[in-house]
Length: 190
Image (cartoon, rainbow, N blue to C red):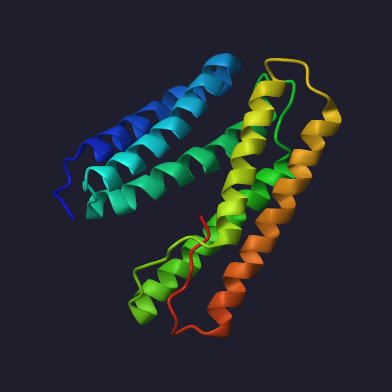
C-alpha cells in the first residue's frame, strides 16, 4: 500500500468531480454529452484500477474511494434518469430506480451493521454483484443512447427487465450469504 496521493486516486477524484456535470447534462437534456461523460467515467475506472495494480499504487484511500465513486455514478444515474420532469424521451421507470437504490441502501445498511457488530471490513465483490453492476451500467448506456438515437422500445424494455431481475437476485444472494454464516467473510455485491 502507498500513500493516498497517487495517480489512480487523482483519476478517481476527477471522476467524482465530473459527476455533477454529468447530472446537469441529464437535467438539461444534453444526452450526447452525458453519454460521453458516462463512458469516460467507465474508462477512467478501468484505467485507475489498472494503474493501481500495475504501478503498485494501491492505497487505503483508493480502496474506499473507487467503489464509492462507482456507486455514486450508478445510483445518481438511475435517480436522475427516472425524474419525470426531466426532458428525456426514454426514462428509467421509477419502480426500477427505486429497486436499484433500495437494494444498494439495504446492502450498505447490512454492511455497516456487520462492520459495527463483527468488525468485518472486507467485502470483495461476488459474481452476482459483478453481473448486476454490468447489467445496470448497460441499462444506463441504453437509456442514454435511446435519448440520442431512435432505438426499438422492446430493446429498452428488455434491459429494464434484465436489470430488475439481476438486482433482485444479487440482493437475495447477498442476504443469503450473510444469513447462512454471519461469521464468515461476506462477499459484497458491487
